Amino acid sequence: MNIEERFELVKRNTEEIITEDELKELLKKKKKPVVYWGTAPTGKPSIAYLFPALKIADLLKAGFHVKILLADMHAALDNVPWTIVDKRYKYYEKIIPLIIKSIGVDINELEIIKGSEIQLKPEYMYDVLQMSSHVSIHDAAKASSDVVKATDNPKLSGIIYPIMQAMDEQYLEVDCQLGGTDQRKIMVLARENLPKIGYNSRIDIINPLIPGLVGKKMSSSDVKTKIDLLDDDETIIKKINGADCVAGDPDNGVMAFLKYVIMTIKNDNNETFVIKRDTKYGGDLEYRNYKEVEKDFVAKKLHPLDLKIAVANEIIRILKPIQKERKILEKLEKEAYS
Image (cartoon, rainbow, N blue to C red; front, top):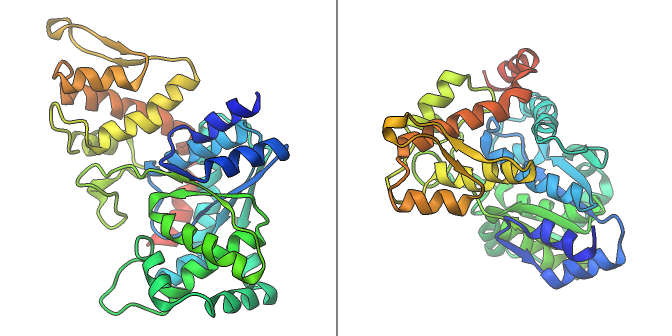
């Protein structure tokens, strides 16, 4: 794979790269760049996690060493009770690698890191305090506004959160950070302030966010908006059937999941997306790419119910490798979320 092919693989399905020129230069000069993706063990992971997992797979294929930061300290700063943070960490520690493995990518260059193992070191906290003297309360609060849960009485922790995430880039010794559009403000804060304390800014690879099944956003507090990784087949079908999906309008969570997850997996495996239909309704439909599906959906040649049934079946199939570990996952889940 040449540099241009590696670049295009990293870029696909992204919202933005800050900056593309920096990424191209990195690929030219470094054989095995290092990137990190962080997630705080807060709510139970849903199928939305398959999207960054696919991007992590792309990065691994493009020759990156990938570090996954399970940010237990960030979870506590985001209002997870300190007494159960470690239990949630253990759940994530088990399930996140399973998500990556379910895609079928080589994970030899994948590394799991516990946030507190680096973030409680004296030199790390010294640099957090040092950066805090450069970042205003206004800028810190703005940076965390799309990530930290909003409350009527905001905690100081919400201001510390983005400064620590900025510092993670340095102490994880990475070249790039991967995150969703909700992380963009924190990434920009890091780019602007790391050089002020003598460190290099990093490249930011930004994914779009997948909408919820109901409304525009997946929410851990509203089960109707998301499918959990341990949901059984019946529950998955029920949730998909209840999802927003208006005929002719592709702006919904079902179509977004099809585009960014299902069709990406299909294309990588050289498979087609098949929608089963009775012959009296025209028979089966077969698609090689998302644009073909969207074209028929917008033209109302593809009924939302037929689409939902096919998507539900694909989700069930994708989750099978993860759910083989159901017994131990349910035990960890009960301890973390009861």
